[in-house]
Length: 295
Image (cartoon, rainbow, N blue to C red; front, side, top):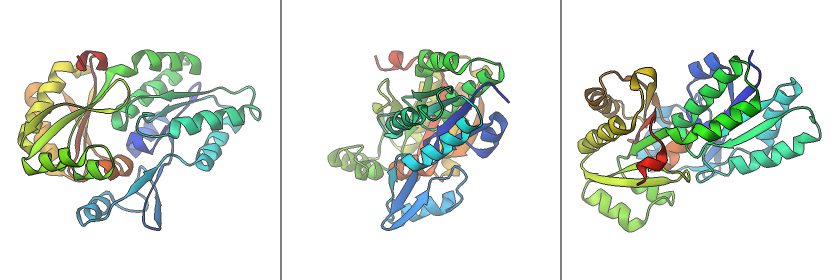
């Protein structure tokens, strides 16, 4: 057992085997359609990933929520009751209000657990890049570092965790309010694929556009190879929204550009998937600072 506990949320997309290996817990977000509400389990307990994305292909649209206050309070109380300090690596505040709720819950529980420390970090990113930060926190815990030291490290290093995305269609982003209707129409009509990164504000930033799905694989591979740092010492996490063949093609492009790459694939979770839609591809890696990529 390490010196403190690490908690993430559903937006992190962290697979079970990693959560078990690093003893990382998570706060569950929720998603819903009509009067049907689901817990955004990282293990797809209530609906399989394929069924989720297939329902979207068939016209179902899901809305998402931040982590409910009750859920967060109960989970955090469990850890504090065990005399554990906690660091919460939250999804970008530009995409979710969970970090704001965490601040409020932390302050409320302070009177109940005055000797315990809770640090809430706005990762300014989401998905497996968020999880990569959490894994480093878990390693620091095992090394006996304090939760305060870990919090300082995250604030100093979080901009080095990068994400690069492309989408099968822009319509889901448009419906989720992430892109204008005219831009979505133009993109779908002319097969324009925007390449999107997470910027220093934790927002989705389109850095370029290419024509055609396969061209987006080449562009992403070029971009990742340009900005990645020490690829032989890290795992590149390649996420896909129920598009296994496309993920395989992108993996091949990445290996052409980065022969030493250790690439692992995973399925994009329900919270990101609800806004991005089936066919989404995302590459998460450690690299040069986001500040360099926005110039």
